Amino acid sequence: MKIRSLLLGSVAAAGLSTGAFAADLGVATSLDVCDTLAISGLTISSETTCLSITGGVDYRFRVGNYRGLRQIARTYDGTFDDIGAGPATAAGAFVPDDAENDYETRSRAFLQAVASSSTDFGPAAAIIGIRQWDEIRYVNEGFGTGVLPGGVVPTANGISYVDSSAGPVIEEGYVRIGDTTVLMAGKRRHGTAGSVANIGDDSPYSFLYMADNINGGGILIDGNDRRFGNHAIQATTSLGDGFSVSAGLENIDGQTGDGDRILDTRRVEDVAMFDPNAAGTAVGVVQYAGDGVSAHATGIAYGVLDGTVEAYAFHAGAAAKFDNIAVRAAVAYDSNFKATALGFGAAAGTAQGFAVLTGLLTGQATFDIFTLSASGEFASFDDETDFDVSGNIGVTVTDGVTLNLLGLYFRDNHNELDTARVQGSLGFAATETIGLTAALGVDFGDGVGAGNSGDEQIVFGSVGATWRPGGDVDTSVVFEANDTGAYRTTVSAGKSFK
Image (cartoon, rainbow, N blue to C red; front, top):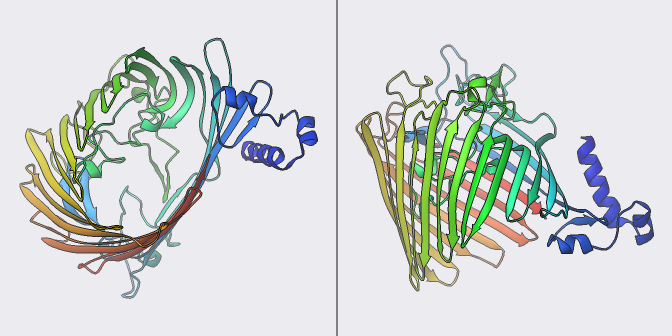
Protein backbone atom coordinates (compact mmCIF):
# COMPACT_ATOMS: atom_id res chain seq x y z
CA MET A 1 0.00 0.00 0.00
CA LYS A 2 2.90 2.38 0.81
CA ILE A 3 4.49 1.74 -2.59
CA ARG A 4 1.24 2.40 -4.43
CA SER A 5 0.63 5.60 -2.46
CA LEU A 6 4.17 6.76 -3.13
CA LEU A 7 3.86 6.21 -6.89
CA LEU A 8 0.46 7.86 -7.18
CA GLY A 9 1.59 10.73 -4.98
CA SER A 10 4.65 11.29 -7.14
CA VAL A 11 2.53 11.38 -10.30
CA ALA A 12 0.10 13.86 -8.77
CA ALA A 13 2.89 16.10 -7.51
CA ALA A 14 4.67 16.12 -10.86
CA GLY A 15 1.50 16.73 -12.85
CA LEU A 16 -0.07 19.44 -10.69
CA SER A 17 2.88 21.35 -9.28
CA THR A 18 4.39 24.51 -10.71
CA GLY A 19 7.83 24.36 -12.25
CA ALA A 20 9.45 25.94 -9.18
CA PHE A 21 7.78 23.49 -6.79
CA ALA A 22 8.72 20.55 -9.03
CA ALA A 23 12.32 21.74 -8.97
CA ASP A 24 12.20 21.81 -5.16
CA LEU A 25 11.16 18.14 -5.29
CA GLY A 26 14.14 17.32 -7.49
CA VAL A 27 11.87 16.55 -10.44
CA ALA A 28 12.81 18.29 -13.68
CA THR A 29 10.10 19.64 -15.98
CA SER A 30 12.24 18.72 -19.00
CA LEU A 31 11.72 15.31 -20.58
CA ASP A 32 15.20 15.19 -22.16
CA VAL A 33 16.14 11.89 -20.50
CA CYS A 34 12.87 10.26 -21.54
CA ASP A 35 13.29 11.55 -25.11
CA THR A 36 16.85 10.23 -25.23
CA LEU A 37 15.64 6.79 -24.12
CA ALA A 38 12.70 6.95 -26.61
CA ILE A 39 10.18 6.63 -23.76
CA SER A 40 6.80 8.32 -24.11
CA GLY A 41 3.49 8.35 -22.26
CA LEU A 42 3.02 9.22 -18.58
CA THR A 43 6.58 9.95 -17.45
CA ILE A 44 8.58 11.81 -14.80
CA SER A 45 12.12 12.89 -15.65
CA SER A 46 15.15 13.70 -13.52
CA GLU A 47 18.69 14.39 -14.70
CA THR A 48 19.55 10.70 -15.06
CA THR A 49 16.32 8.67 -14.78
CA CYS A 50 13.03 8.45 -16.67
CA LEU A 51 10.14 7.02 -14.67
CA SER A 52 7.34 5.66 -16.89
CA ILE A 53 4.02 4.69 -15.32
CA THR A 54 1.31 2.53 -16.89
CA GLY A 55 -1.76 0.84 -15.48
CA GLY A 56 -5.42 0.07 -15.83
CA VAL A 57 -8.67 -1.02 -14.21
CA ASP A 58 -11.30 -3.46 -15.45
CA TYR A 59 -14.62 -4.55 -13.95
CA ARG A 60 -17.09 -7.34 -14.80
CA PHE A 61 -20.55 -8.20 -13.46
CA ARG A 62 -22.54 -11.33 -14.39
CA VAL A 63 -26.04 -12.40 -13.45
CA GLY A 64 -28.41 -15.14 -14.62
CA ASN A 65 -28.83 -18.90 -14.30
CA TYR A 66 -25.65 -20.28 -15.84
CA ARG A 67 -23.34 -22.11 -13.42
CA GLY A 68 -24.51 -25.63 -14.34
CA LEU A 69 -21.94 -26.31 -17.02
CA ARG A 70 -22.98 -28.46 -20.01
CA GLN A 71 -20.22 -30.48 -21.65
CA ILE A 72 -19.78 -29.84 -25.37
CA ALA A 73 -16.55 -31.72 -26.00
CA ARG A 74 -14.03 -33.59 -23.87
CA THR A 75 -10.51 -32.51 -24.87
CA TYR A 76 -7.05 -33.46 -23.61
CA ASP A 77 -7.08 -30.24 -21.54
CA GLY A 78 -10.45 -30.90 -19.89
CA THR A 79 -14.00 -30.37 -21.05
CA PHE A 80 -15.15 -27.61 -23.34
CA ASP A 81 -18.35 -26.36 -21.70
CA ASP A 82 -21.34 -24.16 -22.40
CA ILE A 83 -23.34 -22.26 -19.79
CA GLY A 84 -26.07 -24.48 -18.32
CA ALA A 85 -29.07 -24.06 -16.05
CA GLY A 86 -28.51 -24.94 -12.41
CA PRO A 87 -25.80 -27.43 -11.28
CA ALA A 88 -26.79 -30.60 -9.41
CA THR A 89 -26.90 -30.19 -5.65
CA ALA A 90 -24.96 -32.20 -3.12
CA ALA A 91 -26.66 -35.14 -1.49
CA GLY A 92 -29.04 -33.89 1.20
CA ALA A 93 -28.53 -30.24 0.28
CA PHE A 94 -31.61 -28.03 0.54
CA VAL A 95 -32.12 -25.56 -2.30
CA PRO A 96 -35.49 -23.76 -2.56
CA ASP A 97 -37.22 -24.17 -5.90
CA ASP A 98 -36.96 -20.46 -6.63
CA ALA A 99 -33.27 -20.17 -5.67
CA GLU A 100 -31.74 -20.41 -9.10
CA ASN A 101 -29.97 -17.09 -9.68
CA ASP A 102 -26.19 -17.06 -10.10
CA TYR A 103 -24.21 -13.83 -9.89
CA GLU A 104 -20.64 -12.68 -9.60
CA THR A 105 -18.60 -9.49 -9.47
CA ARG A 106 -14.91 -9.00 -10.34
CA SER A 107 -12.66 -5.96 -10.07
CA ARG A 108 -8.99 -5.89 -11.15
CA ALA A 109 -6.36 -3.15 -11.18
CA PHE A 110 -2.68 -3.00 -12.06
CA LEU A 111 0.06 -0.39 -11.89
CA GLN A 112 3.57 -0.68 -13.33
CA ALA A 113 6.50 1.69 -12.83
CA VAL A 114 9.63 1.43 -14.98
CA ALA A 115 12.64 3.53 -13.95
CA SER A 116 15.15 3.68 -16.85
CA SER A 117 18.68 5.08 -17.07
CA SER A 118 21.54 4.97 -19.57
CA THR A 119 24.60 2.77 -19.02
CA ASP A 120 27.64 1.79 -21.09
CA PHE A 121 25.93 -1.59 -21.71
CA GLY A 122 22.64 -0.04 -22.84
CA PRO A 123 19.45 1.09 -21.08
CA ALA A 124 18.98 -0.21 -17.55
CA ALA A 125 15.59 -0.41 -15.88
CA ALA A 126 14.05 -1.38 -12.56
CA ILE A 127 10.50 -2.66 -13.07
CA ILE A 128 7.93 -2.80 -10.27
CA GLY A 129 4.41 -4.09 -10.94
CA ILE A 130 1.53 -3.90 -8.44
CA ARG A 131 -1.72 -5.83 -8.90
CA GLN A 132 -4.98 -6.10 -6.98
CA TRP A 133 -8.09 -8.11 -7.75
CA ASP A 134 -11.28 -9.34 -6.11
CA GLU A 135 -13.82 -11.81 -7.46
CA ILE A 136 -16.83 -13.25 -5.61
CA ARG A 137 -19.35 -15.72 -7.07
CA TYR A 138 -22.69 -16.91 -5.72
CA VAL A 139 -24.34 -20.06 -7.11
CA ASN A 140 -28.08 -20.68 -6.70
CA GLU A 141 -28.24 -17.55 -4.55
CA GLY A 142 -25.74 -19.03 -2.10
CA PHE A 143 -27.57 -22.25 -1.22
CA GLY A 144 -25.69 -25.58 -1.20
CA THR A 145 -24.62 -26.65 -4.67
CA GLY A 146 -22.10 -29.42 -4.16
CA VAL A 147 -18.48 -29.21 -5.23
CA LEU A 148 -17.75 -26.52 -7.82
CA PRO A 149 -15.01 -26.52 -10.48
CA GLY A 150 -11.59 -26.42 -8.83
CA GLY A 151 -12.79 -28.39 -5.79
CA VAL A 152 -14.40 -25.40 -4.07
CA VAL A 153 -17.18 -26.30 -1.61
CA PRO A 154 -19.83 -23.62 -0.98
CA THR A 155 -19.99 -22.17 2.51
CA ALA A 156 -22.92 -21.67 4.81
CA ASN A 157 -22.77 -17.91 4.29
CA GLY A 158 -23.48 -18.37 0.61
CA ILE A 159 -20.11 -17.40 -0.83
CA SER A 160 -19.46 -20.07 -3.43
CA TYR A 161 -16.17 -18.79 -4.78
CA VAL A 162 -13.65 -16.14 -3.74
CA ASP A 163 -10.57 -15.23 -5.78
CA SER A 164 -8.77 -12.32 -4.19
CA SER A 165 -5.31 -10.88 -3.74
CA ALA A 166 -6.43 -9.63 -0.29
CA GLY A 167 -4.95 -6.21 -1.08
CA PRO A 168 -2.27 -4.98 -3.51
CA VAL A 169 0.56 -7.40 -4.19
CA ILE A 170 3.95 -6.98 -5.86
CA GLU A 171 3.39 -8.95 -9.05
CA GLU A 172 6.83 -8.27 -10.49
CA GLY A 173 10.06 -6.65 -9.38
CA TYR A 174 13.15 -7.18 -11.51
CA VAL A 175 16.16 -5.54 -13.13
CA ARG A 176 16.66 -5.32 -16.89
CA ILE A 177 19.78 -4.09 -18.64
CA GLY A 178 21.03 -4.07 -22.22
CA ASP A 179 20.10 -3.28 -25.78
CA THR A 180 21.18 -5.84 -28.38
CA THR A 181 21.76 -8.26 -25.52
CA VAL A 182 19.30 -7.92 -22.63
CA LEU A 183 19.83 -9.43 -19.17
CA MET A 184 17.00 -9.77 -16.64
CA ALA A 185 16.92 -10.98 -13.03
CA GLY A 186 14.34 -10.87 -10.25
CA LYS A 187 10.64 -11.60 -9.79
CA ARG A 188 8.82 -11.80 -13.12
CA ARG A 189 5.08 -12.21 -13.64
CA HIS A 190 3.96 -15.83 -13.29
CA GLY A 191 3.10 -17.69 -16.48
CA THR A 192 4.34 -17.14 -19.99
CA ALA A 193 3.86 -13.35 -19.64
CA GLY A 194 6.99 -13.38 -17.45
CA SER A 195 8.91 -15.92 -19.52
CA VAL A 196 11.34 -15.78 -22.43
CA ALA A 197 9.51 -18.79 -23.90
CA ASN A 198 7.93 -18.17 -27.30
CA ILE A 199 4.63 -20.07 -27.61
CA GLY A 200 3.15 -18.01 -30.45
CA ASP A 201 2.37 -18.71 -34.12
CA ASP A 202 -0.33 -21.16 -33.04
CA SER A 203 -3.73 -19.41 -32.89
CA PRO A 204 -6.39 -20.73 -35.30
CA TYR A 205 -7.99 -18.34 -37.79
CA SER A 206 -11.29 -20.16 -37.24
CA PHE A 207 -12.65 -21.54 -33.98
CA LEU A 208 -11.43 -24.90 -32.61
CA TYR A 209 -12.53 -26.70 -29.43
CA MET A 210 -9.06 -27.79 -28.34
CA ALA A 211 -7.01 -24.69 -29.16
CA ASP A 212 -9.64 -22.29 -27.85
CA ASN A 213 -9.91 -24.28 -24.61
CA ILE A 214 -6.25 -23.54 -23.78
CA ASN A 215 -5.82 -20.50 -21.53
CA GLY A 216 -4.64 -17.77 -23.86
CA GLY A 217 -5.44 -19.79 -26.98
CA GLY A 218 -3.06 -21.91 -29.05
CA ILE A 219 -1.83 -25.42 -28.39
CA LEU A 220 -0.66 -27.29 -25.29
CA ILE A 221 0.84 -24.56 -23.05
CA ASP A 222 -1.45 -22.48 -20.83
CA GLY A 223 -0.55 -18.83 -20.51
CA ASN A 224 -0.95 -19.03 -16.70
CA ASP A 225 1.23 -22.14 -16.17
CA ARG A 226 3.16 -21.15 -13.06
CA ARG A 227 6.21 -23.17 -13.99
CA PHE A 228 7.11 -20.20 -16.20
CA GLY A 229 8.23 -16.78 -14.96
CA ASN A 230 8.33 -16.12 -11.19
CA HIS A 231 11.87 -15.81 -9.77
CA ALA A 232 14.08 -15.91 -12.85
CA ILE A 233 17.43 -15.17 -14.49
CA GLN A 234 17.01 -14.54 -18.22
CA ALA A 235 18.93 -13.34 -21.26
CA THR A 236 18.07 -12.59 -24.87
CA THR A 237 20.32 -11.44 -27.69
CA SER A 238 19.90 -10.42 -31.31
CA LEU A 239 22.04 -12.28 -33.87
CA GLY A 240 21.13 -9.96 -36.73
CA ASP A 241 19.12 -10.51 -39.91
CA GLY A 242 15.98 -11.12 -37.84
CA PHE A 243 17.40 -13.98 -35.73
CA SER A 244 17.58 -13.94 -31.94
CA VAL A 245 18.14 -16.41 -29.11
CA SER A 246 16.93 -16.44 -25.52
CA ALA A 247 17.64 -18.52 -22.45
CA GLY A 248 16.32 -18.50 -18.93
CA LEU A 249 16.23 -20.29 -15.61
CA GLU A 250 12.70 -19.59 -14.41
CA ASN A 251 10.47 -20.61 -11.52
CA ILE A 252 13.49 -20.79 -9.26
CA ASP A 253 11.12 -20.53 -6.30
CA GLY A 254 9.45 -23.83 -7.29
CA GLN A 255 5.80 -23.04 -7.89
CA THR A 256 3.73 -25.91 -9.28
CA GLY A 257 1.91 -25.95 -12.60
CA ASP A 258 -1.51 -25.69 -10.95
CA GLY A 259 -0.73 -22.50 -9.11
CA ASP A 260 -3.90 -22.61 -7.02
CA ARG A 261 -4.35 -23.39 -3.38
CA ILE A 262 -7.81 -24.07 -1.98
CA LEU A 263 -8.04 -22.76 1.57
CA ASP A 264 -11.48 -23.67 2.90
CA THR A 265 -13.64 -21.85 0.33
CA ARG A 266 -11.06 -19.22 -0.52
CA ARG A 267 -9.31 -19.76 -3.84
CA VAL A 268 -6.34 -17.41 -3.74
CA GLU A 269 -4.70 -17.45 -7.14
CA ASP A 270 -1.41 -15.87 -6.16
CA VAL A 271 -0.91 -18.05 -3.08
CA ALA A 272 0.72 -20.81 -5.09
CA MET A 273 1.71 -24.29 -4.02
CA PHE A 274 5.47 -24.81 -3.80
CA ASP A 275 7.39 -28.02 -4.41
CA PRO A 276 11.20 -28.40 -4.38
CA ASN A 277 10.88 -30.95 -7.18
CA ALA A 278 9.26 -28.27 -9.38
CA ALA A 279 11.98 -25.67 -8.82
CA GLY A 280 13.83 -24.49 -11.91
CA THR A 281 12.40 -24.37 -15.42
CA ALA A 282 15.12 -24.20 -18.07
CA VAL A 283 14.00 -22.45 -21.26
CA GLY A 284 15.87 -22.03 -24.55
CA VAL A 285 14.51 -20.24 -27.62
CA VAL A 286 15.61 -19.64 -31.20
CA GLN A 287 13.38 -17.32 -33.22
CA TYR A 288 13.19 -15.36 -36.44
CA ALA A 289 11.11 -12.35 -37.49
CA GLY A 290 11.32 -10.92 -41.00
CA ASP A 291 9.12 -9.36 -43.65
CA GLY A 292 5.81 -11.17 -43.23
CA VAL A 293 7.45 -14.27 -41.72
CA SER A 294 8.01 -15.39 -38.13
CA ALA A 295 9.21 -18.69 -36.69
CA HIS A 296 10.40 -20.08 -33.38
CA ALA A 297 11.53 -23.19 -31.55
CA THR A 298 11.29 -23.34 -27.74
CA GLY A 299 12.76 -26.10 -25.60
CA ILE A 300 11.70 -26.57 -21.97
CA ALA A 301 12.86 -28.71 -19.04
CA TYR A 302 10.77 -28.57 -15.85
CA GLY A 303 12.12 -29.00 -12.30
CA VAL A 304 15.85 -29.07 -13.02
CA LEU A 305 17.31 -27.64 -9.79
CA ASP A 306 17.17 -30.87 -7.80
CA GLY A 307 19.17 -32.66 -10.50
CA THR A 308 16.18 -34.65 -11.77
CA VAL A 309 14.19 -33.29 -14.70
CA GLU A 310 10.48 -33.74 -14.03
CA ALA A 311 9.36 -33.34 -17.65
CA TYR A 312 10.45 -32.13 -21.09
CA ALA A 313 8.46 -30.03 -23.54
CA PHE A 314 8.90 -28.14 -26.77
CA HIS A 315 6.84 -25.71 -28.80
CA ALA A 316 7.62 -24.73 -32.39
CA GLY A 317 5.68 -22.66 -34.86
CA ALA A 318 5.84 -20.54 -37.98
CA ALA A 319 3.59 -17.93 -39.59
CA ALA A 320 3.67 -16.18 -42.94
CA LYS A 321 1.58 -13.50 -44.61
CA PHE A 322 1.84 -12.62 -48.28
CA ASP A 323 -0.62 -10.28 -49.98
CA ASN A 324 -4.08 -11.68 -49.15
CA ILE A 325 -2.91 -15.10 -47.85
CA ALA A 326 -1.87 -15.90 -44.27
CA VAL A 327 -0.88 -19.28 -42.81
CA ARG A 328 0.27 -20.63 -39.44
CA ALA A 329 1.55 -24.01 -38.32
CA ALA A 330 2.68 -25.26 -34.91
CA VAL A 331 3.60 -28.45 -33.09
CA ALA A 332 4.17 -29.07 -29.38
CA TYR A 333 5.01 -31.96 -27.04
CA ASP A 334 4.98 -32.50 -23.26
CA SER A 335 6.38 -35.68 -21.74
CA ASN A 336 4.26 -35.32 -18.58
CA PHE A 337 1.26 -33.11 -19.27
CA LYS A 338 -0.44 -31.40 -16.32
CA ALA A 339 -3.05 -33.19 -14.20
CA THR A 340 -6.36 -33.29 -16.07
CA ALA A 341 -9.78 -34.67 -15.14
CA LEU A 342 -10.50 -36.58 -18.33
CA GLY A 343 -11.82 -39.76 -16.81
CA PHE A 344 -9.54 -42.21 -18.63
CA GLY A 345 -6.66 -44.06 -17.02
CA ALA A 346 -8.03 -43.03 -13.63
CA ALA A 347 -11.23 -41.82 -12.06
CA ALA A 348 -12.45 -38.45 -13.27
CA GLY A 349 -10.84 -35.67 -11.27
CA THR A 350 -7.79 -37.75 -10.31
CA ALA A 351 -4.45 -36.06 -10.85
CA GLN A 352 -2.55 -37.76 -13.60
CA GLY A 353 0.23 -37.02 -16.06
CA PHE A 354 0.65 -38.32 -19.59
CA ALA A 355 2.67 -37.57 -22.71
CA VAL A 356 0.86 -35.56 -25.38
CA LEU A 357 1.79 -34.43 -28.89
CA THR A 358 -0.30 -31.68 -30.51
CA GLY A 359 -0.23 -29.89 -33.85
CA LEU A 360 -2.15 -27.16 -35.65
CA LEU A 361 -2.42 -25.89 -39.23
CA THR A 362 -4.53 -22.86 -40.14
CA GLY A 363 -4.89 -20.41 -43.01
CA GLN A 364 -6.85 -17.39 -44.14
CA ALA A 365 -7.52 -15.75 -47.51
CA THR A 366 -8.93 -12.23 -47.78
CA PHE A 367 -10.73 -10.96 -50.88
CA ASP A 368 -12.76 -7.83 -51.63
CA ILE A 369 -15.79 -8.71 -49.51
CA PHE A 370 -14.99 -12.29 -48.46
CA THR A 371 -12.65 -13.76 -45.86
CA LEU A 372 -12.17 -17.55 -45.93
CA SER A 373 -10.55 -19.34 -42.98
CA ALA A 374 -9.78 -22.99 -42.25
CA SER A 375 -8.14 -24.70 -39.30
CA GLY A 376 -7.28 -28.19 -38.13
CA GLU A 377 -5.49 -29.67 -35.14
CA PHE A 378 -4.75 -33.02 -33.48
CA ALA A 379 -3.76 -34.28 -30.03
CA SER A 380 -2.14 -37.71 -29.64
CA PHE A 381 -1.98 -39.28 -26.18
CA ASP A 382 -2.81 -42.55 -24.47
CA ASP A 383 -2.37 -44.41 -27.81
CA GLU A 384 -5.22 -42.47 -29.43
CA THR A 385 -5.52 -39.28 -31.49
CA ASP A 386 -8.28 -36.69 -31.17
CA PHE A 387 -8.74 -34.07 -33.87
CA ASP A 388 -11.00 -31.24 -34.98
CA VAL A 389 -11.39 -29.22 -38.18
CA SER A 390 -13.29 -26.01 -38.85
CA GLY A 391 -14.03 -23.49 -41.58
CA ASN A 392 -15.25 -19.92 -41.47
CA ILE A 393 -16.67 -17.58 -44.12
CA GLY A 394 -16.77 -13.86 -43.41
CA VAL A 395 -18.74 -11.53 -45.66
CA THR A 396 -18.85 -7.74 -45.65
CA VAL A 397 -22.51 -7.30 -46.54
CA THR A 398 -22.47 -3.49 -46.61
CA ASP A 399 -20.29 -0.82 -45.08
CA GLY A 400 -20.34 -1.56 -41.33
CA VAL A 401 -22.23 -4.87 -41.59
CA THR A 402 -20.41 -8.23 -41.47
CA LEU A 403 -21.70 -11.81 -41.50
CA ASN A 404 -19.73 -14.87 -40.36
CA LEU A 405 -20.61 -18.54 -40.82
CA LEU A 406 -18.72 -21.25 -38.91
CA GLY A 407 -18.70 -25.03 -39.23
CA LEU A 408 -16.72 -27.34 -36.91
CA TYR A 409 -16.28 -31.08 -36.33
CA PHE A 410 -14.49 -32.68 -33.35
CA ARG A 411 -13.65 -36.37 -32.97
CA ASP A 412 -12.92 -37.65 -29.45
CA ASN A 413 -11.33 -41.00 -30.25
CA HIS A 414 -10.53 -41.67 -26.59
CA ASN A 415 -14.20 -41.81 -25.70
CA GLU A 416 -15.54 -42.53 -29.23
CA LEU A 417 -17.65 -39.36 -29.23
CA ASP A 418 -18.38 -36.81 -31.95
CA THR A 419 -19.37 -33.14 -31.67
CA ALA A 420 -20.19 -30.65 -34.41
CA ARG A 421 -21.00 -26.94 -34.35
CA VAL A 422 -22.79 -24.69 -36.84
CA GLN A 423 -22.92 -21.01 -36.00
CA GLY A 424 -23.79 -17.72 -37.66
CA SER A 425 -22.92 -14.28 -36.31
CA LEU A 426 -23.64 -10.73 -37.39
CA GLY A 427 -21.76 -7.54 -36.63
CA PHE A 428 -23.03 -4.00 -37.15
CA ALA A 429 -21.13 -0.74 -36.63
CA ALA A 430 -23.97 1.52 -35.47
CA THR A 431 -21.62 4.50 -35.08
CA GLU A 432 -17.87 5.05 -34.99
CA THR A 433 -17.87 4.12 -31.29
CA ILE A 434 -20.82 1.72 -30.89
CA GLY A 435 -20.91 -1.83 -32.26
CA LEU A 436 -23.72 -4.38 -32.13
CA THR A 437 -23.39 -8.17 -32.41
CA ALA A 438 -25.72 -11.18 -32.58
CA ALA A 439 -25.04 -14.91 -32.90
CA LEU A 440 -27.03 -18.14 -33.18
CA GLY A 441 -25.66 -21.66 -33.28
CA VAL A 442 -26.05 -25.28 -32.32
CA ASP A 443 -23.69 -27.92 -30.88
CA PHE A 444 -24.81 -31.46 -31.62
CA GLY A 445 -23.58 -35.04 -31.47
CA ASP A 446 -23.11 -37.73 -28.82
CA GLY A 447 -20.20 -35.76 -27.31
CA VAL A 448 -22.61 -33.05 -26.14
CA GLY A 449 -23.56 -33.59 -22.50
CA ALA A 450 -21.87 -37.01 -22.38
CA GLY A 451 -21.55 -38.07 -18.74
CA ASN A 452 -23.35 -34.94 -17.57
CA SER A 453 -26.75 -33.78 -18.80
CA GLY A 454 -27.32 -36.41 -21.48
CA ASP A 455 -28.11 -33.68 -24.02
CA GLU A 456 -27.18 -34.42 -27.62
CA GLN A 457 -27.98 -30.94 -28.88
CA ILE A 458 -27.67 -27.45 -27.44
CA VAL A 459 -28.96 -24.41 -29.32
CA PHE A 460 -27.33 -21.19 -28.15
CA GLY A 461 -27.39 -17.52 -29.01
CA SER A 462 -26.23 -14.10 -27.91
CA VAL A 463 -26.71 -10.39 -28.49
CA GLY A 464 -24.30 -7.69 -27.42
CA ALA A 465 -23.15 -4.11 -27.70
CA THR A 466 -19.76 -2.47 -27.33
CA TRP A 467 -18.93 1.17 -26.71
CA ARG A 468 -15.40 2.44 -27.31
CA PRO A 469 -15.46 6.23 -27.05
CA GLY A 470 -11.67 6.51 -27.20
CA GLY A 471 -9.12 7.18 -24.50
CA ASP A 472 -8.43 3.43 -24.15
CA VAL A 473 -11.93 2.93 -22.69
CA ASP A 474 -13.65 -0.36 -23.54
CA THR A 475 -17.18 -1.22 -22.36
CA SER A 476 -19.64 -3.93 -23.34
CA VAL A 477 -22.88 -5.69 -22.41
CA VAL A 478 -23.70 -9.21 -23.66
CA PHE A 479 -26.75 -11.42 -23.15
CA GLU A 480 -26.36 -15.20 -23.74
CA ALA A 481 -28.88 -18.03 -23.58
CA ASN A 482 -29.39 -21.64 -24.67
CA ASP A 483 -32.29 -24.06 -24.93
CA THR A 484 -31.43 -25.82 -21.65
CA GLY A 485 -32.92 -22.81 -19.84
CA ALA A 486 -29.60 -21.14 -19.11
CA TYR A 487 -29.07 -17.42 -19.57
CA ARG A 488 -26.47 -14.85 -18.55
CA THR A 489 -25.95 -11.08 -18.82
CA THR A 490 -22.40 -9.75 -18.62
CA VAL A 491 -21.51 -6.08 -18.15
CA SER A 492 -17.86 -5.06 -18.37
CA ALA A 493 -15.86 -1.86 -18.41
CA GLY A 494 -12.17 -1.10 -18.49
CA LYS A 495 -9.60 1.60 -19.09
CA SER A 496 -5.83 1.47 -19.43
CA PHE A 497 -3.31 4.30 -19.47
CA LYS A 498 0.24 4.63 -20.64
